[in-house]
Image (cartoon, rainbow, N blue to C red; front, side, top):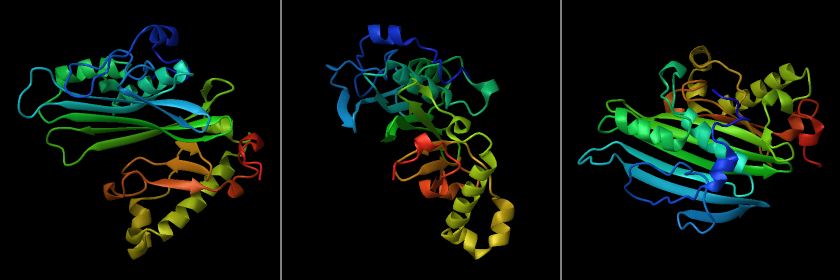
Length: 270
């Protein structure tokens, strides 16, 4: 995967293009599907705090197909004032479709993925993309990216969720290690373990037979986090710490438990 701080699509090229996204049937979304022109009817402007956000919607079935047809739906966001972040959202959503890096197709954007998908998808295959701003806290924009892939013959979809914490002042994504005070990773794991224990206490499946549940679904670390006003939200993949019926579990670490662990600049003033 290319660095999250260096998306494949150059922002200046994206800025030069104009989105012509139309909801409904179509062959492929425009090359700049997540970068909308303010005059575009398919882009719904709104604000999240002091952040300008545009919602981008596109959907389409495989051109020329009748009956059961492969399908793609996109419900994403664009940031008119931050083209680099817009391009990154597009790139990471496309990247998340690969469950195995060795099997991932030759694509770096949603438009490229769509063209590839039409060539390999079977009748009932479908891919859904969703991006939203989860929260804005000070300098941080927390973004939630979600994909779900339905493969013909599979019992259920394959979900994936990725959080990005965008630092406005530096124009880049912040990693977990950059958010933590140096050397405090073990303390972060212990805080996460405590949050996991509280989650288990409210999990009926785990309470029926705690020992068996812990053997089947033991605690794991995760660095997939989002900084929100309520605390640090940590996301897990399906099948990681719980069966598929539990979806993609998430744990919330209150800021009170992160003092001395999270860098002071990221903690709320109170």
